[in-house]
Image (cartoon, rainbow, N blue to C red; front, side, top):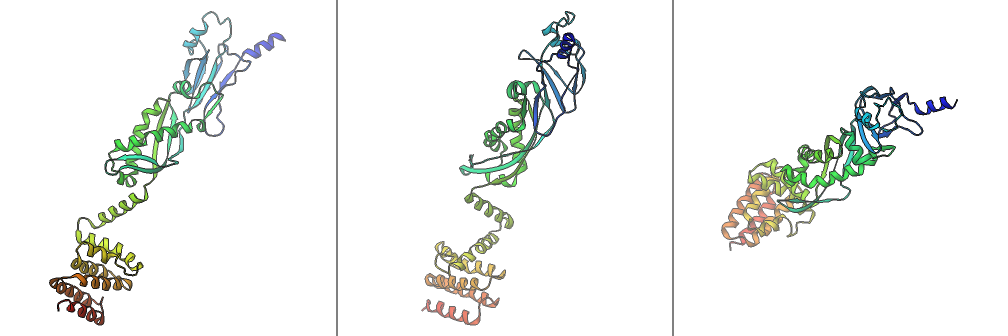
Length: 348
């Protein structure tokens, strides 16, 4: 009976790992109280690799397949354990299985805004979010550098390390991409490629391969977002300054109307730039697009302010613009006559 117990204790028929659930990267086969004799079988499934560790040193690595453990299939371990001595004693090694499947939809993001250097704006702060996928390609390196002798090592265990790598390399990726800071939000695919190129060699040092990287959103500071919005507006009108003036005026008139037509609105800004005559033209172009109500009041207030400081030639030019507004039905006859009277007094 004692002999049978000894044989049962020493013999392991099949060494295998049937993965249960997701997220396990490394699993140690339970060897407590057992040893391996010549002829045992090692079953490594697709998307797995197995590593034999003897006395703390990695001896052999096995890929997918069914392996009979003999002196032919364990040459390194055979040398270490002297199996060529007629297998006088069983050997005991730790066997680790590693999942080589893709670990997809791993999240990354900047919990706090990070500071990025930009050639146009100097130091700016942004937040970014996305996901990535990776797999183990070098289980020997992953074992020695990351998972070690733990019974189970999961994706959650390495998550913090990988997120840290992403954060550490974002600044360098932006610099190497050559993408202007203001264009990052509209070039997320290129940014993701640059970030992946930066991360691949870093992850390879851990025995991992980066299989995919996405940037799902980039949040710019509010002040730079306004500049980006303006740049988009400029792109819509091209290099036509007339159209750009229309765009700028259309943005400003609602604010002028909300402010009750005070001197701090578009009229005041235009006068401050010495553009009294051009103001009437800009207003006419925008009002033609359908601006009514408060916009008419804004036009009248602008003309009145302009008249207060216009020279005689400017008065005549302004009257011509007001005449165009009346001809287009934007100003009534009464409004035109009132403004005309005010302007003519300037010539006296």
